[in-house]
Image 1 (tube, rainbow, N blue to C red):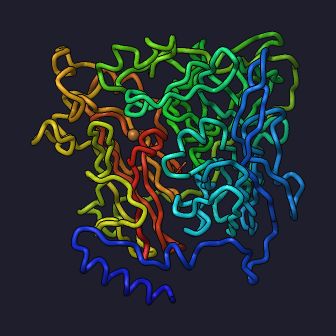
Image 2 (image 1 turned 180 degrees about the horizontal axis):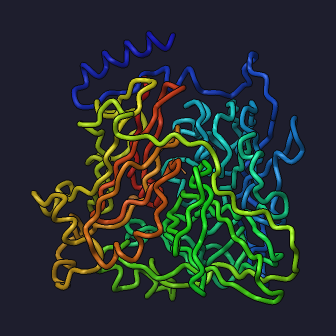
Length: 546
Ligand code: C2O
Ligand code: CU
């Protein structure tokens, strides 16, 4: 069936279906790929597998059983894949803008899975939508052109209901895209351009990963008690007295980091999510929510040999419902680290003096700032309403369904839409009529009356931060509005809203407006909470670009 015929059928369904519509069959049938396309001539061809492995994560004792992506290069530059030694993270995928890439992915696990290339703008059929999840032994063939500019992205499992646990057990890796614009800049390269993948895990006394599925962990998100950087605990980097680029990725299921130096030195970012900024931005600290990336410019020039700096997650509050924040959210039960606690992430030790450091460029890349005027719906933004019911975090009051979109989720190809992301506790079910203002009143940890928090498990008391990810093209943040709470004050200077984004942290009580282009590809593109427990609980929907 042609796309147009499919679209006609789709529109017919929507007319019949009222509020929601089933997606047309062609979306799943015609675009399922288990063989290469004859007319597609790849520059890079890769084989990926997902399998069980044993990796020495901890420094002593037995190896840890993990699920891991393995990759080999069939065609193209040998460094298209670079494996971090002895690691559960999949190989770093190094791509160049303009390359055509084909990936043969074979599932050698004993459960279903699929890979999503988070941050890359690729066709629906190569985006790892969970409808393409493959069974053990099956193969999926991805084909896409790298349209993204230089930046850092993140591939991971996207098998619905299994995403959180599979990512937790290891199924993820870093993507680095380079381009000619970036090459004109004198940015740190090679040994000075390093990953900083931050994740939290919990281990049992036999060094095996512990993943807890209980009600609080699923509703609040799983928090581990051991911080790993690039797959290792107690991370340390020996650096020279020069500038480095560290590609920070929050690959955690639900932990939000507030990156900052122990001595108060500010942090400089050169890229957010999948793209370089127009110019570097320097902040006292930087917030990094699950799914987000920030490329850090860490300059050790002028530091004496032997000096040590510790990168921390600094304390903050307000990301969790007040009762969980006070309880330490599971931390009490497991001796863990609560959301917003202070802890070290990595130690940087200057071990060599050099004098050839690149200088931080004043300008990075040409950047067209999108405004509301660039959108075709400035006065009627598409809503993404965040709400929590018992065991059911929702988007616009709905859960994910593989084959459903509503009218407001249908977007014509080529449009740029204004989207408003906000908390809506009238959808919580327990406190009817309590709208956004109610949510704001309860935002942060300022509610002085503990009674308010004990009355039920829905509505405003479940107000928490959600990192909202949209598949497809990168977007820009138009505005943020939040109530003036102590919690918000502890995070607000750490948001960089001037760059390209695909994931945005929406704090309790906050309203975030974005401008999102829907160009190049028709089809289904997911949007969801990147708290992976929330995603698996159904806090996910999709846009249908037609
Ligand atoms: Cu990083 Cu839909 O995911
Ligand atoms: Cu969420």
